[in-house]
Length: 491
Image 1 (cartoon, one colour):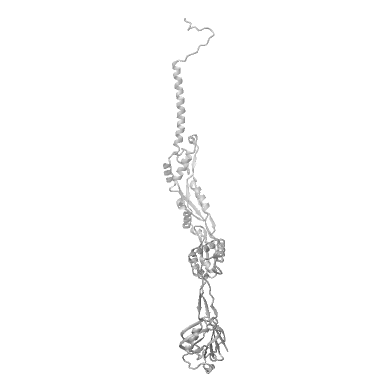
Image 2: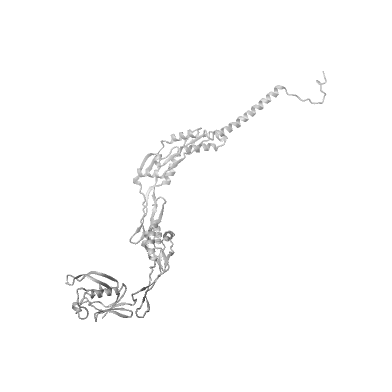
């Protein structure tokens, strides 16, 4: 035996594995690694797969749908809900009707997407727990108008619609007046919506018992009264446009005509508009002329005897309205009405200076009529420049005394008056140069007379109240006395 075969006593010798045992260990290690990879890969693969599919334990509206992609699930939901009907009770009536007629629409696409979204949010372990159901409700929409139409057509006898209050402008008082609203009876829409939502997702849905409720008008009497009060306060605003010492204020009737108000069903509010076209018309027709100051030239009379000057007519500087500001004034007025607050509005005027002119009319001239002497005397330059005989009114037609002013003149006319019943009627054509100063009393030509003055018995043969003159003298008086000339009649 060699020394290698007999080691020394007291030493340890390493045992070397055989070639077969080493091969077996490698195989086992490989199998363990493979199983680990497959397990992890399965989990990762299932995570990816269920991002586009439902879990095996998915239930939609009480029906198990299993594993399905979005398109498959959408078709399944559409088929499942196509013929859904509901039993509806209202009062003592009961009908069966498709859900669509009640305003319910199942959104199959949204429901499918929601189901898959629920799957993608679960963990891999949960997906393998198929015994745990995942309940996905149907996604649906609700249309109130469709439900109301169904109720009106089916249970119309039970429905009484409310009526809105009215808001009108009373032309007699130029005030807005509120009418009265009434309440109605209709289905409780919120309760109906809850019942329909539960019905869609119930496994064994009960009948839908629609409850009736009192319905207020959209625009109540109280709201109309408050609106009328507000509008009438705007009508009372003192809308005023001024320039210098002159001002023009719109009366309430005018302001009321600018305001238009009504309850708007769409916005569920009172809408108020202001008629800018009417405001512009008021500015143009009333404000512009109302603020203008007419220019008056100053007239100076020079006495032919004393050479002294007298102002026959005092000059007045004028101002005209600047039309370029009309749009601005209109907008300002509309804004004040809208704000419910008024403040004086200042207008811009274009000034014009008066001129001085000479006149041959004495400012102190006047006509004197002496009924005692039957004379017409023309006064000018502090003296009598003409004296004419006249014929005044006869008994019963006496010429009244007093101080007057010439107010109307005409070169020719037909005069008539009196009464046919009592024989006092008269009608005289072609009367010339009438100068009126007191109602129907005038100086005028009298072509039918040949005598004038005190030689005429006026009580018997006098006029009908006028002062008769020869036509040539009547024309002199006519030319002497412009409108506004003082006339003094005395005895």
